[in-house]
Image 1 (tube, each protein chain N blue to C red):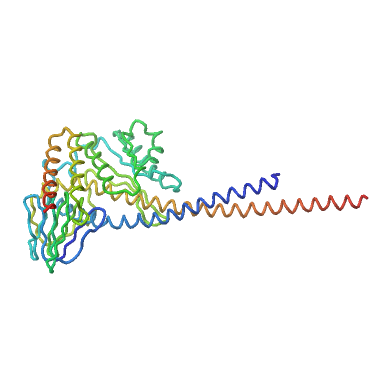
Image 2: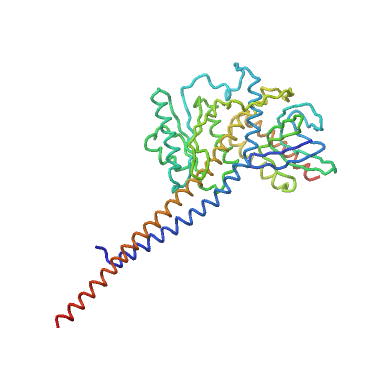
Length: 130
Length: 291
């Protein structure tokens, strides 16, 4: 199954994999070959691609969506950082940035959206420590 | 008649200028390569996004629940022009051609009795439009401190545009930038981003029936604002490549002109020098003959 992870600035991953774990908004899902065509939005979290040698490729994404079709999976993520480049400090920095932005708005809806993302990032940070 | 020293100085100064223009041309060439790579790297994301969106939008009938970013506000009274230009000059007609396109557009809309608001990205466009549209320009986004435009800047500009839209400040938004065709050809382009428009044929007809999670409407609502950022990002990248291309050819011209000028002035210099030698010789000989 072909898997492609694309950010606005570059293609982060493109290759054959066995399964892809997606942090979909309505719950995590694993996509394997032969999955029904679907389009889903993503929350902040890890995309995990497993190839035939059972090697995992973990990438933290924030916001975006995934398209699943007969050819494979394409993830379009607005921000994506491979786990090798990721440190808890870096996530902390993003969280702080989001908090500043949240405190800067008085739009309740936007605040709630920021809070949600912050929570998801905190969760990702915990996962990373494991 | 300029003295020999004047001529020498003049030649030296043209030579110095030529060195500068030559250096700028080479720098622009190097930057152009990088800008082109960045523009190419950004293409897959934009293409995918447009394809998904066109598929979604094709399956939706415009109704009262349709997101306003797609359906519009139902009026066309207020137009927002997002004018993207460079931060620096010395790149030929690059900035002025974008500004001219925006100006014509704005004048036409104003003649139709519409309200025009202008958001300038890049200082040069602001400088060119400021005199005529002082009241219409609502903001200037300065990217001078940014070395390489990234998605963050596009997100920031998109944020501003979306905030204005949510506040009901405008009905239609058009993006002005220069499309990069080749080093000698950059095409100033106007592209409507709100309400979203799709080029014909961008929707790929697939037999596969997609499952949507959550439903189509919600996905569309979350993709539409992102699409604004992606479109702006693409415009910024195209602009960056165009700017360097325009600068490269402008500086190439300048170098060539300087070369011509040096050739002409050297000729004058040599002629004057010879005339002077001849004159001195005549003076000496006629002096000797008089004795």
